[in-house]
Image 1 (spheres, rainbow, N blue to C red):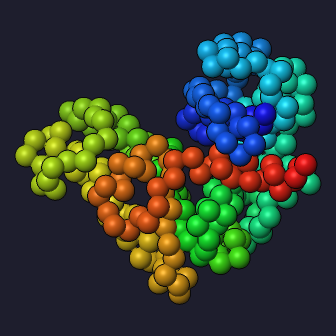
Image 2: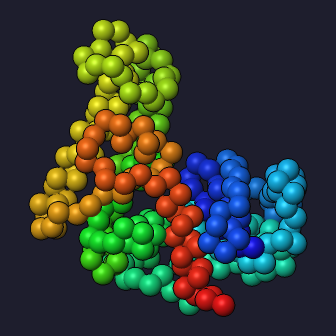
Image 3: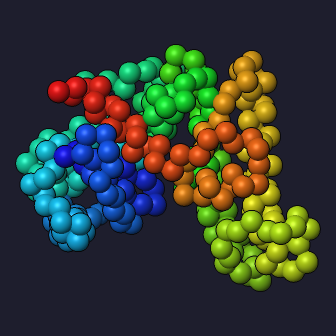
Amino acid sequence: MLLAIDVGNTNITFAAFSGTGLVNEWRIATSGSRTAEEYGVWLNQAMALDNLRPADIKDVIIATVVPDALFNLKGFCKRYFKVEPMVIGAPGVDLGMTPKIDNPKEAGADRLVDAVAAHSKYGGPLIVIDFGTGTTLDVVDADGNYAGGIIAPGVNLSLDALHQAAAKLPRIAVEKPDRVIGKNTLECMQSGIFWGYICMVEGLIAKIRAEFGEDLKTVATGGLATLFATGTEAIDHIDPDLTLTGLVEIYRKNRPD
C-alpha cells in the first residue's frame, strides 16, 4: 500500500492507496514543528479506526510547500514504515514534464504535481485553478509541461485580512449569496468575496487564453472549488483529489514495479 502525503500551508493530507485506488485519507493541521513521534501516534490511531496498520504501508511519496515540515516527516516514515520516502523535487525524481519558467526550483511542489495529474486525466493545454491557501492559476501546455501561472491571495486569507483590518466587519463563512447587491453587512461581504473571486478567476482565464493564444480547458481543485464552480461556466472540470492523483502518477512513473 502506498501512502501519499500532501503538505499544504494549512493542512497535511495523508492518503493510503492500494494500486491506484484510494483506500482512505486523513488530515491534520500543518505545523513545521510537529515531531515524528506526534505524526506516528496520530496517524496510527487514525489508521486503526479503518483497520489499517503501519505494516500495511510499503512506500511513501511526499509533496510539500512547507520545507520545515519535511525533516520530521522523513524521520516519521523511516521510523514507522521503515521506508525512505520519495520526495517531489528531490534529485532523481522524474515528474515526466519540464517546468518552463525562469527558475524551476521556485515552482511549488503542489503546483507541479497538479499539472502532472491534470494533463494525465484531461489532456492539454489547460489551466489548473487551485482554491487553496492561495488562489493559483497554472498553465500546462499540450505536452504536459508547466508553463507558468498566477498567484493571488486565497479566499480565506482575504476574509481574515478584512476581519482583522476593519473593526466592524465580522468573520464570516464563504457562501454563495442569493444576489450581488447586498442589503446588510453580511450579504455585502459574502458578495464581495464570492462574486469578487468569480470575476477575478473569469478575468484571469480570459487573459491567460488571450496571451497563450489557445482555448485552454480548465480544471479546478482545492477545498472551495465545488462552491465557486456553481457561480461560473468558466470551470470545465472539478477535481478535489487532483494533487493526490498526481502523487500516485509520479510514484508509478518512478517505481513502475
